[in-house]
Length: 289
Picture (cartoon, rainbow, N blue to C red):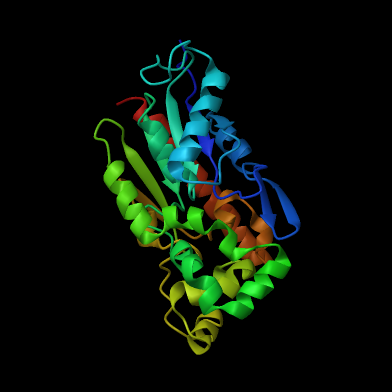
């Protein structure tokens, strides 16, 4: 008798618009899971997105997610805590970017096989630290971002949850649970292979002056990849670490069109497929343990 397919509950990253779409200013690139679903299903993994997450603290988002999960499976009239396992197969949690933090909270309320994340700021996001002081430190860039539709200071209360200090406190509340294996898939690329979208923020995020930024961009410096253009590799690492994968923070979700050169897109396509295959493999192999 064939074993049931693994089921993945997916939590996407930051989505201040609340519509589960990836926005770059006024540009809408589609659902944040649009390229993930076919890749996972190709490997026989059932992929279910938990919509409506992406803004607020991990705990607030997890509370919403649990209500959505309850409606999706509707396998218990009682609270989800201690509910029976999903009827037709093992359950796994998967989170990208801050969705990985939401998955960790949800894992404390459900019986799951694995918790997998990639591009998640488990030790804090430098962008959050920067955002808390950004308007005062970079007034011109703040004005430019406002013209693009991003009001930096508006979400300061949210950013605090994802700062280094905020994530330190979060990790004390949600340590690694021995009963639920955690896997992190680390992505890191040199600056020259990071989407141009990140270039305006890359220098401030990585503490680079204009001269060093130019050297890295042209390949004239020893640019050792230590981030995905947004989240450091060190912050992404938690539990059992896999990778690194040559993908930036948006391309790691399959948005290859953000890269300007065809050679970059081809390499990223192969890396994206490798990332998805490795995540599926970890989930499938966990079922035999």
